[in-house]
Length: 365
Figure 1 (cartoon, one colour):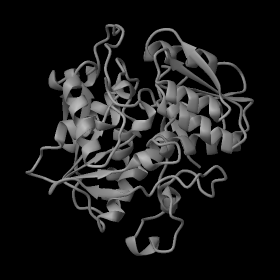
Figure 2 (cartoon, rainbow, N blue to C red):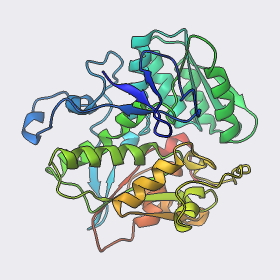
Figure 3 (spheres, rainbow, N blue to C red):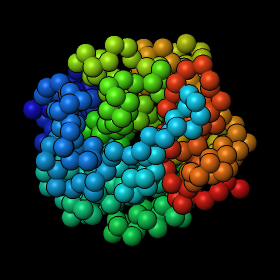
Figure 4 (cartoon, helix red, strand yellow):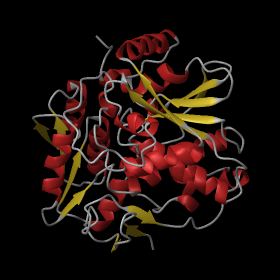
């Protein structure tokens, strides 16, 4: 059975416990988990057309909370750049990949309540899947979150808590609530089940590309949940002998809020100890994270892949959103960051995620 493992001090906990972080260092958990067997492209024919088709590599199976998430289209944009349309998920963002894992785990643990925090998309996904699982849910969001996202959270029946301040203040409020007895903290940052959901993004690429991966995978990075999921998947596929090389991971941040890019360029293994100030305003609200708890793991994953960090200005984000719309794709401002960063690449193949629908934020002002 999988178990929680602290990557910093080796502390372990049973997954049936509601301990949302390492009790020693208060850091996020990893998951001690081994796939039950190798995948084969031939074995996938006839399976359920959702991310649950990759059952051998998932820590949960036979879900009751599924909404048919996953298996989003892969569409070429240029001769070398393709887009994976993860805004076509049930709640219109890639966060469904991880949220279904958290809600399914919570359903099996039967907590008194579920708590989540988000800049919007993770909160809407957790609210939807908790509704599917008939679990009471409270979602904490920062003031200034897109009204369309808060409306969606309320529509799914979740209680909404709007927190004064930025994303970090919101996370602190949720973590305080998560310490109450009987609470399952559906954290897309602290709970590693979320990462094992987002890794299916890469398994789908591998399947749709005929058992191979592109030269590079670009992902927007705030808390790094899609990037770390991608790193998990590429490691598993390589260990199973299903790919002969691991693609470079290209991490994209908004120039206005780019602590990881700065640390990477400085050659640092982690963020500075000094507390970060409030995040600067950016159109890419979904990645405006000034101090991600998994910073060390994110930096290591990018370096080990031979990848790099890129940053994009607000003007490039505006231009990228309009450019994609002119190509037929209406994507939210966070979701266009990777296209802004690598859309002009011609020397190698790369996939970008269009990871949130434009209806969630509207056009950039």
